[in-house]
Image (cartoon, rainbow, N blue to C red; front, side):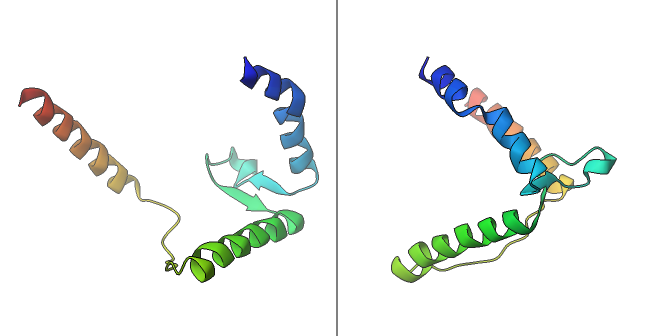
Length: 97
């Protein structure tokens, strides 16, 4: 019930539409149908993203002495297919033990 109240109060769809209108972000390759989970950022969206990353770095890397690593942002479908196959094998093995 609380989730419904929040949905009414904050109007997520209207907020998303406004952010897209002001070009904070847009789905990548939108003119070709878009790709789920990939976004292009406009000038304001890029700045907001940069500010969030900087705050994250300030807290975790500088204050908490954690290490920062850079990794690929995309995963090949073969990796996901293999992961799913291994997952099903583990589930099968656990079920038979």
